[in-house]
Image 1 (cartoon, rainbow, N blue to C red):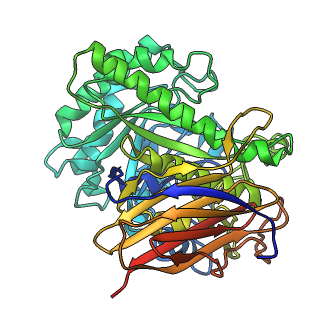
Image 2: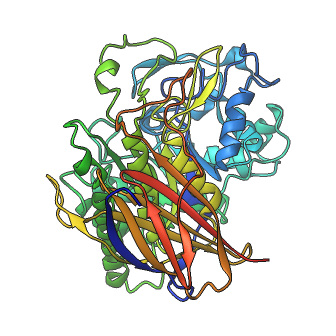
Length: 505
């Protein structure tokens, strides 16, 4: 083949089912932070803005990603947010000091506007309630405002605001990162567990059909992890359906091999939370399984320094605007693979965030919207990663890096869509120098053929996209081929791949 190759093996079989993939694992997140809302999804003076002020160019890209659910309105911001500020006539809405990010919140977009936007984006809303400065009362009132048909104070108030029909928001987060010292209204595990339980109990009385997400640790490096999970679940286990996980990775040291291995840390995080949940299940002799909501995940570090330069108390400044590199896109692909391999427990996940703020979609105010490097693995996995996750049996050469040992060069996930008679293999090749040639046993998929092999590759780990130039984009010239009952996957050095097979018609 004229290029150095390293060999690996993999077995893919219809019988090795992990679980049905919940489409909400491809969710995202919009917080009132930076230009995510103002200048992101909402810019009334933009040439593409619709009658509600929503940017159509952004909506088109969100629809392209097929995002099934979007978490709102925060994030750290929700812990001091009064939802009542964001409803009713826009001219009457107060401007507030927003304490999480130290900006002015104009409240021109609130609950109703976001529900409108979500409908246009073909996505559901995952609503978070304030358990920092507020609690049971505000949460039950917001739920009644959103979901009750009418005939009560809060539901009739919604109708008077021009929204006759309820929004029927069915997934609710009980606060955000309540263990974090940066959080307004930080709680101890005991304080949070009690408050979350009582809030959830009241909310279920208002609408028994909702699903609730209880707060896990803010990240796996918190000194109280995983004690926080164990102690809070003592209270919330029977009221909540999911526990949240949040994790961001960076490459401050410029060590690419180590950076690409960080999805192993994510794997360990997920396994530890599952073990903790199952311990509480056993302790309570419960029949219920706790599922995971990985409702903040991404690469985040590029913008840290410039964010320190922003003056406080401005409106929608450019905060957390990471410009993503090619290597970031590869890690994103591996993080998605990790969640798919745990699809039996990870049912919801939200790439944080969706527009401008550590996001796959960027905009210029008054100008174009464009795709960051991380858009592509997210797009392909969301669109083609629907169906049943299969367990790939992998035999791959490995490497050691600064923080990790035995890192497989081959990092795959496998999805079988029976309805479409389609088998999809997503694979990151972490090798910086060599092509991976993978012998993949696909004998249980008789009469299948390769219909597409998408490759995301670049010789420059730090290549980025801009509004004017797309340097990181996939091609469809992948070289994988079938040989008998074997698929030979040719994964170029330092690349992310999607190989799609379909049954011959």
